[in-house]
Length: 323
Ligand code: CP
Image (tube, rainbow, N blue to C red; front, side, top):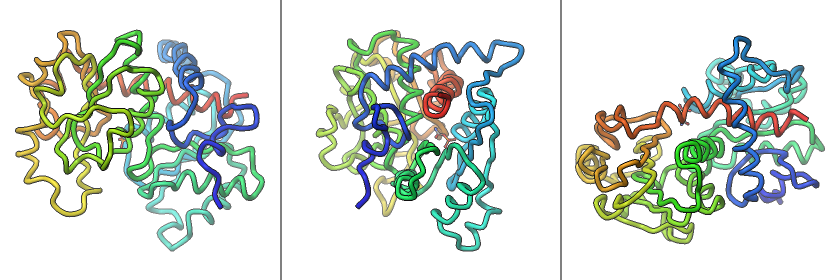
């Protein structure tokens, strides 16, 4: 039987061994990651953007699914920590010849890997790797989930929390709305877990019924199907991409219909507080979940999210493997 993620994530001293999901992590660890990330934002302003925390370590980026932001910022973060970074090109790897995920992992273990950063279309793939490492008695290699299926995207959730804390300072008074395709979104799941663990008093989801998981209220959120009601008085607006690649069957009449009801336009955004921030994990579908005027407007902090992602990933990697 496989260990629960929590057992795999924390070592005997209660410290991070792997980062597989935000669900169930102690608030103290989330806060420590955000606090650790803060000074790393300044590394980018130095002439030599390097720290020696991962010198001599080998970080393997294993992206079995497409990525622009996550893969690149993990690579930048690892290089800023002085690690050796190996980007496995999945399309030209022996995965294409039928090698299994765990056989690939065993071969990379034999190459003295220190960390695997894993993105996979199958929910649970990073957990499978972490469980396999435990089964073969390897406590040295760390696994970071860079997005698995619709399950979790913990570093995205963490960089989103860093962004909120940067602009709003305190989680304890906030109302946060997450809009759109919650059903297929690993980002939304990680955001909801992080927001509730950090003590945000009101987390809303705004979506048509077809794009919400059943019993989503059990995650501690308030459900709205109407944008005017759901956006009223919110401090933070988090938009989500329609995840067409994960949709089975017709859950929506059309992207145009979705935009009419749930696309974030300047008019709908007026319901939020005047100083509300607008976030999006990327990649954006302009004119579907968000209007270009909002995406490029004064409320948007979408590109700062990407920049903060480097520092947050440096924090995670240094806490895991930096001693
Ligand atoms: N936010 C995010 O995961 O983007 P990528 O798919 O480009 O990594």
